[in-house]
Image 1 (cartoon, rainbow, N blue to C red):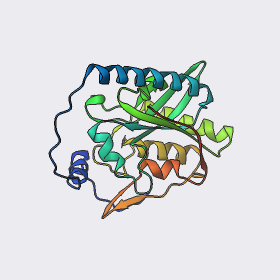
Image 2 (cartoon, helix red, strand yellow):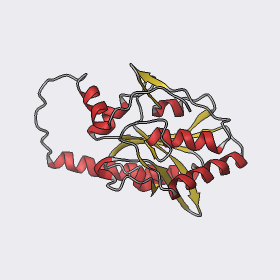
Image 3 (cartoon, rainbow, N blue to C red):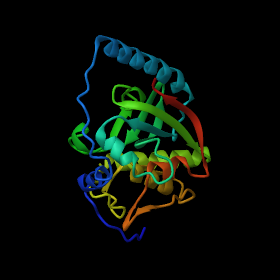
Image 4 (tube, one colour):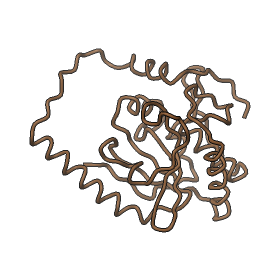
Length: 223
């Protein structure tokens, strides 16, 4: 992949996006007992919905989520066509468990290595606003090729790419890891558009779930 790109540290990207926001001062948030109870009920409802949607997940599915922290909100703004999701990974079903492989940086993952987390942890309603499940039109052999590549990246191990450098194979950010797993695992049957902001080239989460070969399987908005 010979792409001319600007390598921007994650912090610079977030600063750029944040600078586009209003400078209006926000009043401190005050939580009441009713607010706390409402939040507990929201989390409990979400956990039930996650358990209900879990059986439809298949190995190789694209799993997306909407984080509720500032970094997630900023990264979601990078999506050029649909800003629903801020993060993504690839599902692996093992017996009765569903795991999600994904690339995560920052304080949530100090060693920066690829993560293999249960769906319940990946979709945690305390730190997310919802999830999506998507499936590409590929055959079982191609799905296994994708998972083989995912496990290869996991074993290396690939670490999180704070520079957002699409040329690097040793470091990747979330959408890049998913794109390269699908591309290499299917012998380039699946190819993805590259988004652009000025001279910065990148893969957005929407470049994945809006792919013409990808269809939605299930979505949850935590309410």
